[in-house]
Structure formats: structure tokens, C-alpha cells
Length: 410
Image (cartoon, rainbow, N blue to C red; front, side):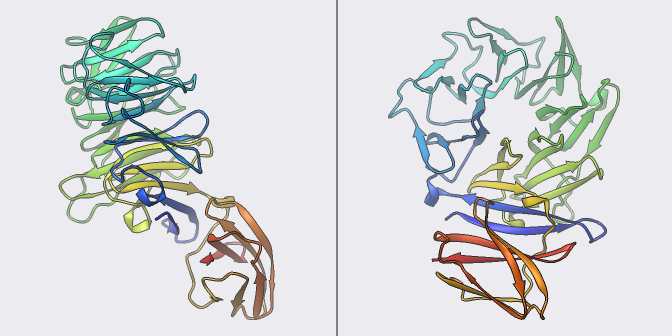
């Protein structure tokens, strides 16, 4: 069942609050499988999810499944990675090669027609339009017409699991066991633990708007500065149950505010979550299942054009909606009452002690559908015009305090 959780994090001073809404999706809502391996937002804001049953596209209303039953030209139904590129094409990676979807049909590439290895770890596009396929044997790249590859000794023998380019146009590769590799013209420069990297086991790489390289590892995040001189390490982005502090990184994405988002999962503890580095305050804000995420086992993250974070887990998909109307929110306050709940015509708000207060009602897509004033001890709201579903009533008590209630229209 899809549901929404409104929650608040009080940061350090316990004065300012950041508010988010979580929307969770499972097989009941249209997913073919709750075990989602990867997720990607395309240039049209469609959401693509991969599982062992194929790849699905979600347009905000409907889920469309693509698999080998309907499209025999696909490499496999067991999808390991998805990438949306700038021309709108969708690429999927499998253990049997990659497939490209042009909106009509699927075209597959493997060792017979371009790849250096069929076992695909990553798919990325650099700013020059080159498609890079990280594989078990290194990396293959496609310019739209021709394929080429790099392998050992230029690339570490463990392969490539992430590719990006910096502000100078230089390409960077993350590798499972060999640190990261910086390609400058025809030279391949390795950064590993001897250079200051946190771990040889790198899992992902992303570059922010300041040309800092955020490198995910098995022990946390290493950040290499814009001049490639200084490493800064973050090993505890997500607070683990004591005594563990290890934060193995699954994925890194940079949002539209230049904030890095880190996906974390600790397999032996079956604990995980996502964390955001806030540049303005230089601290981490984390989210996990206790805050409403659909699951603990985080597999992948992606960010849409509205800066919402889409999170793939082994128990479904979560959409994290940030800063609803840029207001501050407070959790449910039991001193105030709304009834009946569920309701289908009149919703009564009680116990506000003769105050005059503003209220807003949002639907489960975070859209404002109703607003007005509450005057006196009690207010009856006519909600008969609202469609059936879950809604959130936000009541502003003063400039810094907003309380929220979830209610259902049936």
C-alpha cells in the first residue's frame, strides 16, 4: 500500500526544523517486485525501476513493465543498473550485456558487438555525450557509432562501477578494489589508500558544482578537493546502533542545491538509510525506516527535477519530498483534535483556545488543495469536494510552529 509519512528533524539547537513527506510504493501500487535493484529519473521526470522481473516506467500515475516476454531483444529481465541519457534514451545493465531503449524498441550490446565484458556494473554519460559502461573487466565507451574499451593495466583488474567527469572534462572511474582513477588525456592516475583515500573498495563517485569529488567507499565517503590535493573523510553520515559506526556507501547523487546524498547499507547489521550533507551548516541529516522509509536495505537513489529523492530498497520505493512550501513543520500534537477521521463531508478541528490560525490542506502529491482561517475554539471544514485519499492538514500556530495531522477522505 502506498502511504505518506510526515516527519521532522530538530537540528542541534532544537529550534529550526526541516520538514519532509515520504511517499512509499510497493507491489500493491503497481511495482512488479518489491525487491528493487536500481532506480533512475529520466529527462521527462518518469521514474524507472529495475528488478529481477524487468524494468518499469512510472509516469506518476501508471506503471509500465518492459521485459523479455514483451521485448525479446532485451538482454535480460534481471536489471542491475539503469541510466537515462540526455537524448531521452534509457540504458539498462545486466549480467548479459546492456540494452538501450529509444522509446519504441530495445537494442542490446554485449561482447559480440562492443562490450569488453557482459557483466555490467554501471552506466554513465559524460558531458561530451559519451556513454560509459563499467564492467567486470574495465570500461567500454560508446560515442553513438563506435565502441572502444579500457582495461588492465590502465584500469584496475577489479573493473569499474562508476564514471563521471570533472569541470575540466577529465573522466574519473571508481573501481571495486582499486580506488579511483583519474584519466587526463592518455594518462591514468590512481588515487588509493596510499594517496589518502579512505578505502580501496570504492562503490561510486559524484562531482559537485565546486569540482569536489565525492567518493563512496566501503567505510564511508572521501572528498577530494577541486585541485585534487586534499582528502576529507566522512565515516559516520548515518548514525548506526552502537557500537557500530561503519557507513558502507551504496550510491552518491548531487541534488540541485549542490548537496550530496549518500545511500548507506550495512549488510551484516541489516541497517541502512540515506544522508544529506548540508553545505550551509556543514552537517549531516539522515533518514531511515524509523522516519518512514519503506525499507532498510538501500540499493540506489535518484533525484527528479523538483529535487525529490527517489530511493530504491529491497522492500519497495520511497519518494522523499523536501521542504513542502518551504515552511517549518511540527509533528502531530495530541492536545489538538480533528474528527471524524476518516471523513467524507465535514472535518471538525477543535481546541485552539479562541486563536485565529491559518490552515492548509495538501494531498498526497504535496499539492495545496484547500486553505483558510480557523477562528474560535472549533472549526468545521467542508471537505466534500476533496477526492478520496490521504491528506495532510497543516495549521500555523505562529511564525515558527506548524502542526500537522493526517486524515483520510473516504
